[in-house]
Length: 373
Image 1 (spheres, rainbow, N blue to C red):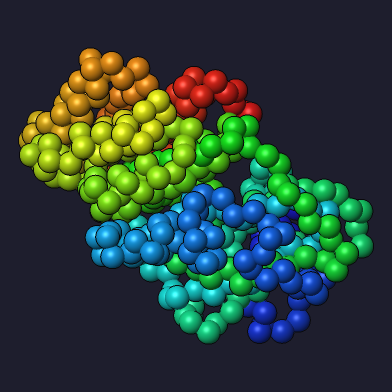
Image 2 (cartoon, rainbow, N blue to C red; image 1 turned 120 degrees about the vertical axis):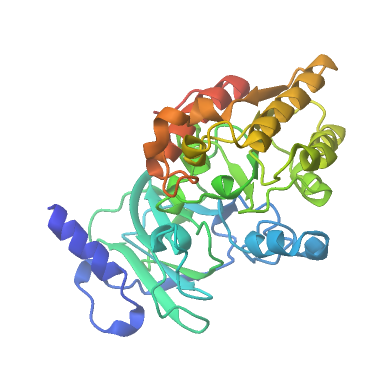
């Protein structure tokens, strides 16, 4: 059975131009062009303002962000397409800008479009070595033919580290498309931070810790993690605060010194508080990295940054802010959990699972929710 499923998956990754298909992977005859009012796009707050482009920030303010931040914002980590359908077939039509090739990410994490059916992983569409503008991929996830009609909740998770154009979704001719299952709460959790926040180096989009937590608590989320560029600029503080969130999670930092943190970090929180005075804020210090195993005690800047972040949160609490909390990153992934790292710095799926375990409990408490798992 496992061999048959593996063969079906491998065949499903073939482009529409490759010829004949087995019946269970035959492309559907009905395609819903994207964007479409028939489906819901979550995790991309400026999707309509950006005229259907899968950007994580508003293109109208592109020039106010650092160049690297904007380039990363074109990668739709955390973006999801959701709907409910009784379709007996499901496919996606994609166009990628270039082939995958990041050294610490496999193609599934960098370019994958994960399908989850009723909150359970199904399979992933990916780019190949020939990806580029003009090459269109039709990935068939399943085609049950004339099998019984069953309504299913459908979620596509968009790539962590590659811009993609989702051109269309394929369903059978008689499929009914309905709104997706509602979230447990109406407002998303907004995450801001670094490459770890963005999802590096999860094996695929559904395995970022935010995605795992989202499924466990049935909550929406927005991923504003920027690889190497989580530097707490004022323009990003305004972007974070512009989203009416249920909670803000500030995860780690790419700043290298306490002095650089001092210039922006307290002000970042103040900007959020000026617009959202009562919304919970969770501040997370950096997780363990294997660098510390060799240079333990030598990285004084890292230790100083953690202490500084803690002191800033403590000052807000002292000043009367009852809705801000500090989380020690090493409580989520610490020195005894090095197997949870891919390259000594970024979590693998095991590491993201540990982080998700901790964040699930914390958010469940803060938001008054129960985990589905």
